[in-house]
Image (tube, rainbow, N blue to C red; front, side, top):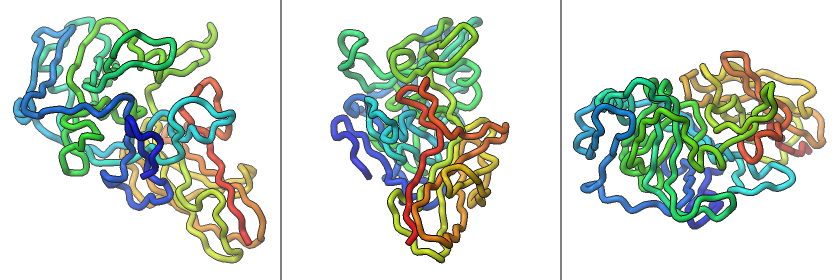
Amino acid sequence: MITRERQPPNLEMPFHTLDGAITPTENFYVRCHFPIPQINPDSWSLRIEGAVDQPAQFSLTDLKRFPRETMMATLECAGNGRIFLAPKVKGVQWELGAVGNCEWTGIRLSHLLEEAGIRSGAREVILEGADKGTIAELPRPTGEIHFARSVPIAKAMDDVLLALEMNGRPLTPAHGYPLRAIVPGWYGMASVKWLQRIVVTDEPFHGYYQTIDYAYWRRDKSGPVLVPLAQMSPKAQIARPQSNETIPVGTKYLVKGAAWGGEGGISKVEVSFDRGSSWEEASFNSPSVRHSWRLWSFTWHPTKPGNYTLLARATDCRGQTQPLDRNTDHGTYRIDHCLPVEVQVH
């Protein structure tokens, strides 16, 4: 793993090691805003409160009476690829590996909300983690805050999973033990770790990590509007070759990577060897699974020596294609444009 920060720990997978549809737990990226909380599973509980008929509290034993299910889902940090932005911007300098695809096992959030009874007029569900700390940069609230994000009621009742296991084993402390949210199709900041409290609210949530951080500018008729990050955009990344790799002329080279994001899944990946002037369609090496990445490859036959710029772009099932150029309204997040890989053929 590549260490981007030691305290709190922020680690990424070397993306060129991509090998298989499932990311091993030990290779799955770690994103922490505050120190990893020390949680005693015997005294831990999950509280549900707010706009509900019956506020509830669940221990780990209580959660076992709900039906379990497993889903495959890709999580990507909203700042993945930030190291490529120029000029340099603030934030963890992720390269390509703040992304991973796992099997998550747990219970539907909807089961717990139904038991608590959602009141008429409820709009959002706030997910709060046990991790907490102070914010260093202005503007900021004073004192300690918990990491928290919200999702609309419709999303909460649809497919949000409260995960107890990752790849068939209990969550590790770095990945949210004993319970974390998995919000499929959304950037990773929504999948709150170390869950301890769920608040149903009839008003929009305006917490720090909903408005000041993890937000971007969207162009509306009235002008730019600051909105919270949510759904991932379609995106393809090249795992091999790596930047500055040297490839012998006249050989067959297997260009490979992964693509994810977009409602309905990825339908096409294309690669370019001339900075986007022409494109070739790649082949998929894994099936289409909603909210899970697809592995892809293309056999390249470089016949002339020289410097080449490789690009990959994804198209989702709704026809939305990954852009060539950076949208600067996205600020330090949502790096979803095609990232170039420079190689030399000799």
